[in-house]
Image (spheres, each protein chain N blue to C red):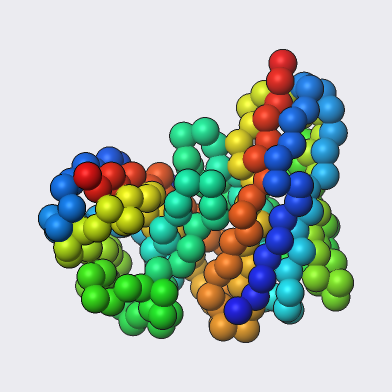
Length: 108
Length: 116
């Protein structure tokens, strides 16, 4: 199956800082999603982005499908951004594969 | 619009006991997923349904796990008998998949299972 690697595994920021999270995948994909898992365990959709660039407020994402990676940008981070960020892909078999996540802590 | 509903939210059982989890997907969503998430890891697919048909169940330990999705709406995941290693969070997700391929998945809050 498709391998998904996320980096960095852990990230600690001061409020107001910017960050970039990376997701590499080993094969072509039909679907790529970014999720935020909050401290209560709820997985929240951030982006559905199999290719191209999208922006939603302070968050934006870019997927370069031909080079098999996606980036999630967080600008002017807030304490509520803390949690784990997951990248999930689906290839030709449609079987979803998640990365191990990036754990983000934002200090006030 | 209501999101994905799961129950119970928490369950504590003794090993060798049976346990069942219930999921109600977003209305109209044809695809339903069950995942297992261990601490510090990403969710891992157990089974995927397209309507009432299980189309991906290779990761489901069929000796003790079973699932059903009657009438292509609600779904139940069962473990019998439970083992200590089954302690985890069980997540349900749904999506409205069209001919072009998989679409956005929406997750429920999960069921936290502790097997003693």
